[in-house]
Amino acid sequence: MLPQELIGKSGEIGYESPSNIALVKYWGKFGRQYPRNTSLSFTLSKAKTITNCNFQFTDKAVSNLDLAFTFEGTQNQKFEGRIRKFLLSVQDEFNWIPFVKFEIESKNTFPHSSGIASSASAMSALALCIIHIHNIVEPTPENEQLKKASHLARLGSGSASRSVFPTLALWGEHPDISESSNDYAIPFHEGIHPIFHDFHDDILIVSKKEKSVSSSAGHQLMENNPYASVRYQQATQNISDLIKCMKEGNLDEFIRIVESEAMTLHALMMCSSPSYILMEPNTIEIINKIRSFRSETKVPVSFTLDAGPNVHVLYPKAHKKAVKAFIDAELKAHTEEGEIIEDQVGLGPRKV
Ligand code: PMV
Image (cartoon, rainbow, N blue to C red; front, side):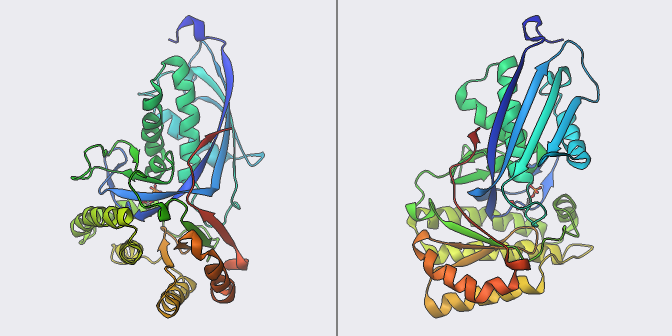
């Protein structure tokens, strides 16, 4: 039962929350969405989800939830089903959920079906709204709220735990980082060289098609991957090495580690059983061209990949002009309909 004074109370809350791009990848999970290794990501700024939630506390619990969801202005059964399943799955911690009538609207700033995974931005925006409501039921100290939101976002989508924090976020226990946790991400920008605070990430959309193998299935396949344990050790070492070079502002080392992480992620897919490939021929063309351009011009541009064919082109802000000219002349032709999202490291979620 809800406390009597809450019944009938209503309100509205909205959050916009960005996507993030992992530099050291989370790939492999166990238990209730715990990561097999530590990951570190840039929080982006333009690729965002904006979620608005109207809520009203009632005196009767609805077992399958009283929820209406619209995505980009229209009812969306598939997404509504996912949100319902997620909210039902966290009732053990948020036991007021069945007593609330929810009307949730959501939209993305990036084109729908651009091949960009929106689970990190969507789940973090939703988690922030839910934590706002939770705070009415059970006030939480301000410094605990983001931690709680990160924890809740994680239960929706592991990588979403990192979108709650600005600039750079780290998720998963690491032997050298005492505050690190499998439960939630932590902000990680302190002491990082300023060159990384406004790093650019131009996302080249190679294919807008839905992925043939989902991330959940990919994580699952790591359980029988013969290289899994070596991979988790490598990720732990890469975290230490990447943090060191990001503190020093060492771009050569940054590029070496970040590109190796992207290639490792896709190599793990290729040696899973069953094996699969998410890169497209154009992904490889772009990677080769970036490497040649870097070696010829010494412009410190690099790439990383998500679990998909699209390429994230990473570089310091000062090189924007040179990289833009290069992308227009050489890379754009390898994208689907010239689609590029010119993003950069950002300041994290915002109440709207
Ligand atoms: O959060 P999930 O379950 O969609 O997994 C994301 C996995 C990668 O994007 C490939 C890596 C990462 O750390 O974000």
